[in-house]
Length: 74
Image (cartoon, rainbow, N blue to C red; front, side):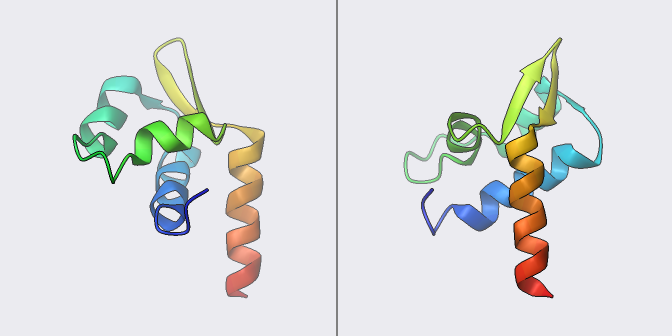
């Protein structure tokens, strides 16, 4: 995971970890046309979020990444 994108990717995971979000809502908030800022694509590719029945939610790996981020802060 790119160290530049990692904080943004974890922000995306946190966004959907609060509650499953509609796919369209997530893409409106997180998709970009900038090839250097591919937060949505990289987060999905890393297996941190997935789409099920039109809802985006954090995976077990996404929740674990959030837990690691919180433990580093503490």
